[in-house]
Image 1: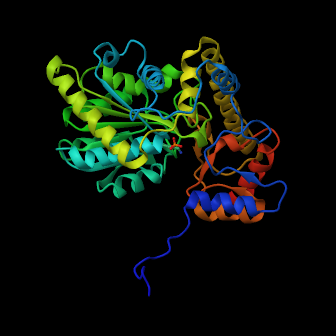
Image 2: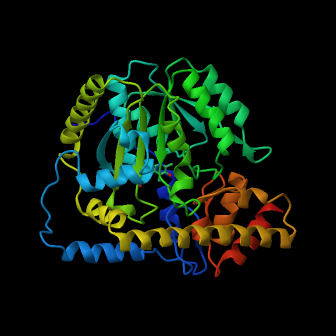
Image 3: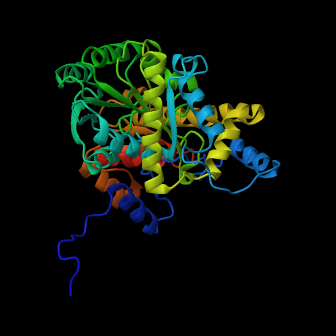
Length: 412
Ligand code: PMP
């Protein structure tokens, strides 16, 4: 008997498919500009010195064990995580207006928001995503039953942010829609709004009573500054202009280099001006529902990574080291952007290359076409997404020259 007559095989995930082809490629000078994970100047994964130190402190601390966490997660982690993203002086913290739930990294936080909003949101259950965005955003929200739509973001012709299209789409979306925002280091374009542009975006969201979700996957990783990379979130919350709750999905994959440990949190921030009583009622209700969801899906969140990140955030020595590690990673990436640009200019490669250094964070939207990306892979063993997105962390002193020459050859 056949039990699965309707099941169809899906194509491989584009990113993980790329990774598999890279791994199978026997060329010794191949270059991986695919997956968004930091590499050191030798092209190797990097365990942050802050993490090494925190791990040691943690394991040697009295009472260390592997017991289950509570359903909300590791409380010292949740408190420290909220403080690092919102800022110690946040209105949300002083007004105790936050519900935090530990999640399976950033993706898990997005999933919780998606299921929660699909069940409880009384507004327009359509999530507006930037065009383009991290491909998994579409899958996460669609799988949960929400609708997705897009707002313009990348102006391909001028290789810059389409701020007019962005703002007018938000203004024209049905009142009370869901807007997903990348607070910094936009994936895949690496292009972020300026502070003045953020004000326009947040004003439009406030005016239309939309509900914003901030997907923070790169705090501190983009600029090296935790404050700067969280500025858009902090403005949204502290300005008090947004009348809806604000959802913040927080990943520690990149900025602590804990990719595989799945450390993250969802913070729900209630708007200012609620009476103390209704705020407490709402907080308890939200918390109970997030707990119920977590309990049914994973029972309780993973402990190990959360304890390490809590130590990194709260132990003064580890915290100092981490802030240095963030500068190490972000400045190496910025240096590689510069070198790639200078080499392309030096080679006289057709086109303009300022966008490579104007973009921030892990990725550069190079402007290369799918055909060019294919030729890069086949002829040169340089792997990047067919959209032209390159993970700049894959560049180093040993391969940037080769990559520039390969770009030059496929562009001409
Ligand atoms: N959001 C964005 C924009 C991302 O780039 C990523 C990682 N690629 C994530 C969320 C989620 O990452 P993780 O689940 O590993 O924290």
